[in-house]
Length: 363
Image (cartoon, rainbow, N blue to C red; front, side, top):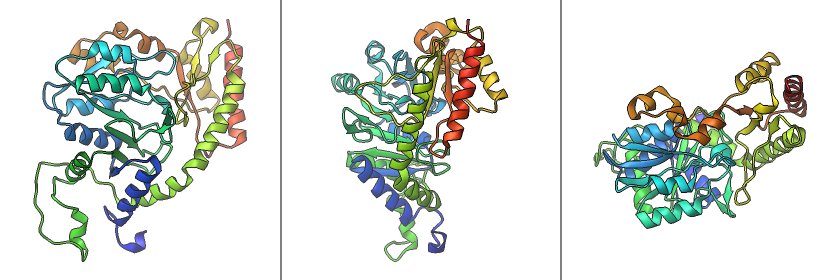
């Protein structure tokens, strides 16, 4: 790829977009430098303006709501389903106001949110649906591939994701006008493919049609993405194997609850989120993590709900128990290591550590 002399946006990006669109079954794919950029561009194409409202689950990463604030619009936070951790459509319906313009369902850990009721609400109220699929590759919802269902779907190719380019993201849509707008706005609002200016197909002349952004993906990242895309199914199969091993080890332990599997969704297990049954333990979640750290097992918490962060509390006056499902869940969850390069010995070690700690500290 480096021998091609293309380092920034070039032919590898276009190839990556084409093959990614084919993989998920979308009409259009626009490669960008992050999922944050992807959501920002989708909201811009959808016409979000100051004082609009966008419904966002409180249980998500910072980017999902902060892109709404880029427009001086309001992220209208809602609670989640206690089983899937995904956005609760009943809460979505309650949150809709005349100012609501869009909904961003997040597919937590890779398992699809229940989209049908959300799509019905969107149709009834003329709302745009922008799926945050940062975790959801590959994921199906009722046998349809995520990437083809909402108005926009946005992906992350960050270093930890199921397809990783280091940094990167993708937007998919079946709407040609929206795709064109996202592509133009991803590179300074230039009216045509800027990289063609340096080829025999292009011209030095270009026009700025809107104040766009610097969100383009590089050919270096796209070349990595093409290799990862070719390996995606094999990597997914390995994560499935690891998840099954974890399920078998933890499924009957009284202090542990394994991830729920929604009947309408596949699960790529970008994350394996274990719930601690705190009533059955003499230690809390934070102490459990510290014990795992002592065993040299790296873990994380996905996520601290947005309404519990200082910015959202200061800006909107949220209190921790305003969204009780997310608040209570947060204190119980641990994301265990799960990635395709894990060996069977790695998996055994994690299982042994978790079970040892749970057994040692059971009530």
